Length: 557
Image (cartoon, rainbow, N blue to C red; front, side, top):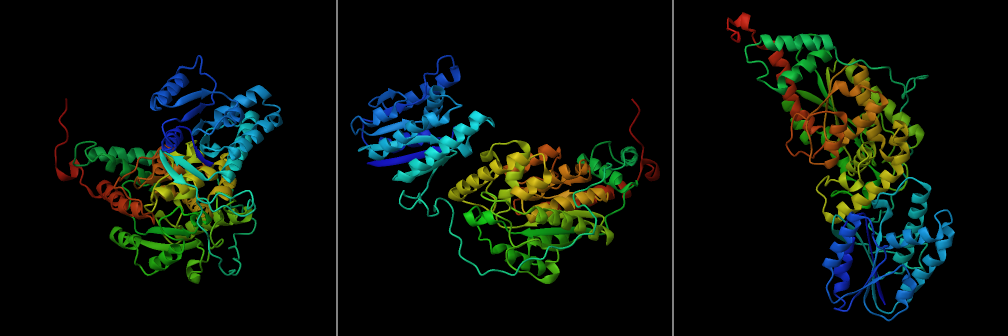
């Protein structure tokens, strides 16, 4: 016997991969089609026809749902495609309200597969990567198929996960004897570390509710109109500076004065935090890099330090959830050491979530009270694009594989692990999409929660913000739910190659100023956009008018 289980989501390429595997067993392959005949469904008919055309003519085809009978006949190399259609047909026959009636079929299939003497490849949907209706029937199907996949994986000689046509070997499935042992699967082992001292949550004002935001008003529309009128008086054709003119008008409206004043204290706050999901191999770098980079920021050695100096901004570092200990002046607002692994558990407790939002609001207040007139949020955290993608996918109702990016430059295997983690995180996020606090607690992290509080509070304080990449923009989606209308105080600095970033910007209806292929984070894209914003202010405030310069305006028609 040699049993191979091939699992994957809808249209993942799992069937083609299974055909490739069984083809190596010889010409006389038995193909078992489990789905009922697609009468009256032209799309399904076309798919079945495409499958048939792909199979060699020497293969025999059996159309049946009686898999036990098939597996009791001979030992020819056999491909069963697939268990999703088979299970749905069995439930149709037994009754979706009485799923216990199909249990003998499941038991019989597992026993027959275990006893089969020949080569056997079974294709099955991975329910976490497929669309399943949020109904009683959907939950029944999901529970039964997930359990069946696990039982088959436990007896299989080989199991593969296929995503986007790329197969990944699941090389640690537990045997029935060792079922209690944790599966190695795609998750890398995490070394034991000594217990660190507990974190004392930073306080917030007694009686204050960090989740209570006042009703926000947008930037002054009357000043914005005054700025548009002034653009028409400047020595240039109307609209000739394109978005630079709109940017200047937005800044004038934010400041409530025309012409606007040049920024005197632009501040970049980098929120640093580790994420438990990084232990699953979703990043190209190990988690300890976060603490090392925090030290690099503090020593002015990182990209954001250089870019900030060029743009006339200064940098503040906040250790919100770094796994290791950092300098006391950097960790005054520390919530915890690393957030939880969102694929399997909550990122934070309720208390930590509220404390993180409060910390972000307090940091914004401290900066604005100290004279900051423009703010930028940056991020630093190995693995942080994974919770960011989960937030974006959940809030934009997007399929998991469509929000998975390469982050720090991961390879295909790490991409698969990341896709699985995002899938599991989105499954856990779905019940909370209408509750910002619960969403942050479940699948974000202390750094993202603090960023959300920071961005929302900046809008409360009527201070413009340049958003950075996918992590900051994911936090911005939640911030705009915490404080509706906050988005009117933000401009998108750039668009990164991360697919989730474009989705988040579209949801916020923000058009990025730059598109340079940046995927560093740290606030780097926003820092590069800052000189553009300064130029927009300078044009509106320092250019001569037609009258002042003695230049003739546009000729009358």
